[in-house]
Image (cartoon, rainbow over all chains, first blue to last red; front, side):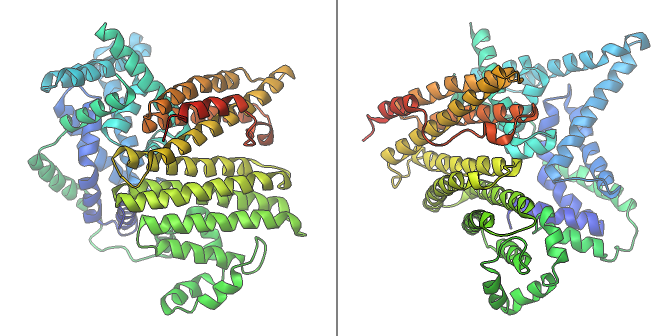
Length: 191
Length: 360
């Protein structure tokens, strides 16, 4: 049975029979990918692991609240993105006085940009790979996310479109631009 | 660093990052199971009628479920497929058109064939055949006295586009298959989509008033053909001896020519729109960027880097589509920006031919 059909069938079991084992099989299929996605967005491995766990728990809840969803990939990644945004918002609210709360989105974005070098420090990377990782940091958030989805998580443009609520054509155009920008950033840093 | 090198570097990065230990995953799985079991009643819920709809959605797209449910023959079909007695009724339904009594049976039979297909290769063949059926229906519909002709044309064009989309999606699923099979199927798809594109272009003027569905169907046919050429080029790049360099060069050249023609036609229409007071600035900017991508594609074609050339062609095509969509959003009718496919760009054709002239 093709992977997508297997996933659809598991989702059917979860929605109709509330089958925990079927949900656990979806967990097995997606846990590594969700963790990798989060490790590019969060400062520490521990936070990435915590939020990975939370993604699956929230997804179970989402399904049982009868909310609309298309595919498991869209569900898990969307919840992961939302939880990451919540994480940064709550972090900033804890650190920033109320009168500066309007800036929390910008600070959150800066904080996200700063997480990427932490990954580089944890890994023993060759020069080119490290250069790519550093350049990824220089991209704006939506471009970086697209590059991670497509080339690190190896999602199809259709799946990315489902996660972001965009058409495949939009996704491909943005990906072309993201790669062009990444090459430009890498060339500038090389100089 | 080229695009190809950058993508390889990023893929290398993906293998080095974000791995969880097996121990953590197993422990976390147990905790998750414990938490969700607590939230579930001890008795499993009974199967409800609503669940049957969810089960059918595994096989039949949502927009066809209404046809499936409404038809009094749908339940008979399930039994009929098992007992093999559907053949007679399906034969009677084969030549029907939207609006005919047995037409829903025709669609349901097709859906069942796809659902029972053993692999992606068979599904591709089914969807190619069903696209041909939808095209045949589009050719026949205008000649019929039909009170709901506009709606039937719209719905059939939609279905035609959906079959083309399904061809593209199933081509993607062939990635892990035997390379020779992939190339053989891709060649069939490319040939068929080129034929359908030509027939569809001839039929479009009769499908009045034109609609977004007709416009989209044309794009989806083009997309399926593009995917097929990409598969062929990829397999050639991987060293599959049965794919000749001249064949790949010719197909890439055809793609460049086609996108260039569309861009020229779209630019012409947008310039007209702008001069008559319409808003077309961003659409024109997108359309103008296409030439840059196609120029790079021609250079890569000359260097026989076919895969990279097709990436640039796709970039250009996506920009044309973006220009078309932006213009649609500004209120222009789809037919005014559909982009002709009648070979109007002689300059593009000759420069593509010179780029491919060194190929054996």
